[in-house]
Length: 625
Image (cartoon, rainbow, N blue to C red):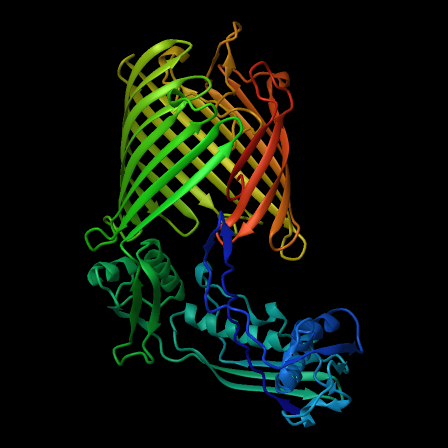
């Protein structure tokens, strides 16, 4: 029998990919320039693995010779260094697949690479043969874990047992299963308040006669600990006491790694640090406390951005924002937004939409997970069914229950003037609003799995007509990915709304429901689908139901295609029949960047009516939903 040492390999994240848009290069790393090879050494590689399936893939994926065979090596020394590294990489890959008696031969110009000196003269190109004999497949036999954490009744502290990752008798003896089991064993102790848990002993023995592996792990839980004081290092304009408060860590409370994760999320949410990390002290103090350093690097205090959107129906839109971070030393943010839209040809400024607004956010208001948000806005919008001039203000709170669940609420006031089928009318409303968002998607810009739900309720009082009104909206989205790394995704969205109140003529049109446009039923004008009164006039409705389904396919790292079908109902008092459902369908392309996919869609209305366009083209950043 022979003893084997199991080692973990550190992985480094791939560098961000630069991209060019309208001649401007984004996220280009000047250091990531192709290396100049002074003495290129091309080679012709022949790979032979005495096996099938996963073990063949594992060998090929582990080999740098395989990965780099389309490019010449950096001289003979570079080729031989790569070959020597492949011995270690391939053996590690075999261990991970459960093969502990493998033989790896790498011959360069007919000679084993391990025996060749770096200054060997090689032909151009040089033949390289890689032969791997995996040997027999090993399985775990005797598995002993000493000092494992006691079971817990707290579901938030529960950690899967080591057997859940394959460290159990008769399972394939994967080396990574041992490493994952070690991490689970340590995590179980840390969830119980033992931050310095460590592996005190590891004995892994392969018996080649029986094709089995015995594993003995001894865990040292270390001392029990509570959180100690947090020292903030690296602040310049930020108030360190406020940063410490925002961690939410309380001196004397039991150590819990989940609390560290929540503290990290709170600090990241401040949006003022380029980097922020927690470092625990090397040892738990004699008082049972574990102090922490929070090491931060601040971002610049200002940021601005511009954007644009276009559709053949709604025209061109341009927008810009200016953001001030950390106004008074406690991560306060002030963002000003301006937008001009509805720009068509020939240019008619009377048809332009305008928006200007500002939002002030005060994080850590009364609680580290609560933000105070105040906003004001003035806008003019020319929609297909009405024209609006309005000013509004909101004051409210946003509370982050977790990384996935957010609730908000507050008060609002709005004054507005509308021109529509009911004539020119003025409205003045005051009310409250409340909302909740549950976001369990794997990615907010380009999701491939998970789900998202948002609910909003808005009761208010309209003073010009002296009546109460209320608006409710519920939206859900879901995503299903297929294949390796989810190149195929089916995405669905369902959105419904209802409005309680008086006659439609006494309700502000921006509170009524319309459908149509890039985020609704594509192929129709923005907010062009409403309720027909029988004489050709269209207003908004009390009820809304929209649905969309998309089939997304990623062709390669850069491009993808999409097919979609959208549908929408708007009703005055009761939902209409199927004949009144507006449908739009189309296709699109996606260009994937570091910021997310750039979107270009073309859609047609499937049951168009008088005034509807023949088609519509939409461009933007991110998936449609």
